[in-house]
Amino acid sequence: MDSEQMRSFLKTLDWTTNTVITLKKMLKKTNCLSISTQGDYIQLDFAAGDICAFSYLITEKPFSDSTIENDSKKGVTFLSKYARIGSACAL
Image 1 (cartoon, rainbow, N blue to C red):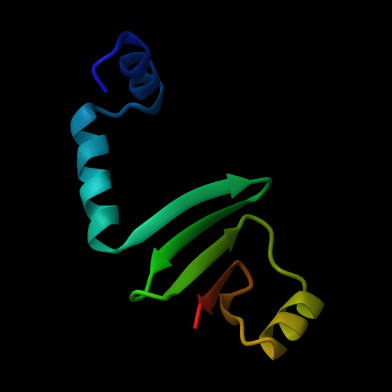
Image 2: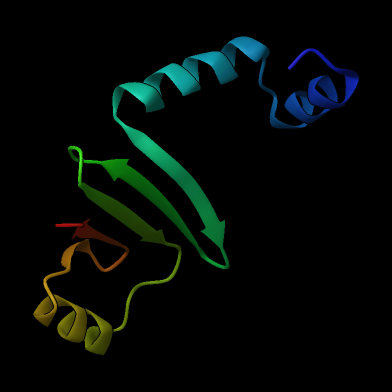
């Protein structure tokens, strides 16, 4: 964290090292496993015990009605046309 490259990167975000440390602490408290993004969505993965996890998938564009209908049949919960929650357990 203490490098010129990191300071430059944080400056582009208008963040400080304290911002990063605070964010890390907050994510750790929620059992966040990972954050990823690709295209027009962001995915947040969380632990829900020793063998289960769930994820939020949040999009910039709404999910199509057919995607919502098909995925809902598979047990996916949609919070809105822009956000869904998936879960997985390894038993």
